[in-house]
Length: 223
Length: 284
Image (cartoon, rainbow over all chains, first blue to last red; front, top):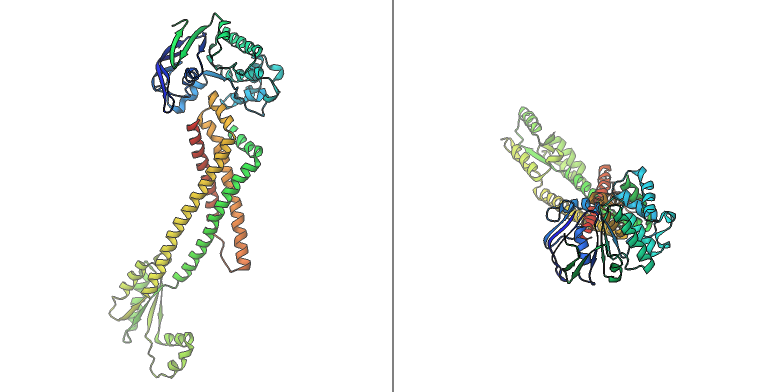
């Protein structure tokens, strides 16, 4: 499904963000990617999303290889991999439903299906009653749910979450992680980057990967 | 469909920004239009001078009528030649008396007509070049009954030098103005792209193709170019009317130039936005 083989990433000014990292994420797996700030969590997710290419090594995502994938075809990976972030990255001035519809529209969903699908996705994340609310009028936890609904628009096999609870209070954090577990129970793999050890301890069934200064220093369930 | 809708809604969402882009394009194309108007009228003036370029073949007094007829027919057959006129000694005298009234006494008082008979060779429009004139003059000079061939080498040379300078400066300045127009369109569209960076980011995030992301901006560029082109056309027309009414008579540029200007506006809009969005997509 996702396979990193001896992946290193060096930035011209920052130096190495990742060094020789290898791991796999299987179908339907739930994994936390832990580490302090600057440990390489976001870089790992960016490489899986193919927003960046490794300096050496290979990232494979459902058969697409970072070595062979031309830039013009990266959209194919993006439709198979959903992404959410700490700062939600929603379109301001638009409603929750418009944000989800936008993702469907720009990826070529048939026009007639867009509204019902957006509503169904918002229901899936428990936000149907607030579908018409503008995103700045709803809470952070709700905004993150909109972001999740948007990430699900193309029915991805994996959800990458980069510190998705970083801006949320404890209750909203629980709600979002429970939502991820719910999606995982329906077969979707989840890879969630976080530096919150307490949060990780609450979910002992999850696999834990830990990065430190760009190196993978711990894997609770190597495959 | 999405692309056109988005391009139109971008106009609606930020009318000031898009109006400003179109106005900047219009301004740049207006400068091109003014330059075109000046170049066209200069061209007309040069053409009217060029029309007076002709080769005069002076004949000896003892030439026979059959020889004149032969020369008339042969010279008229040369591809560069539009028309050949025979001017008899008497015609030449009458013309001199009319054109130079201050010497009428001199011409009228003489018992012998001192003016030679001649053939006036008018050239076709494409052949009024230095080479064309020299070719015809050389052909005409081959007849044994020809006394002299004149075509005002000096001013023909100056005229063609002026024409060349005009053509080169038109090319260089026109290209410079178009480059400025393209830069302005590109800058205006970069602002438009920046205003919609969040949408572009989300499109890339969820897997929209680059072509899909690019299309609304290309339409927007085309619309800004077209609007700017129309503004420039109207402004150039207003300037033309003003110059015509208050300064001096000028001619309006041909319709095909206007159409080309509009097409150039659209093409530059598309090109500039294409380059701007391409650069942006490489950065994000």
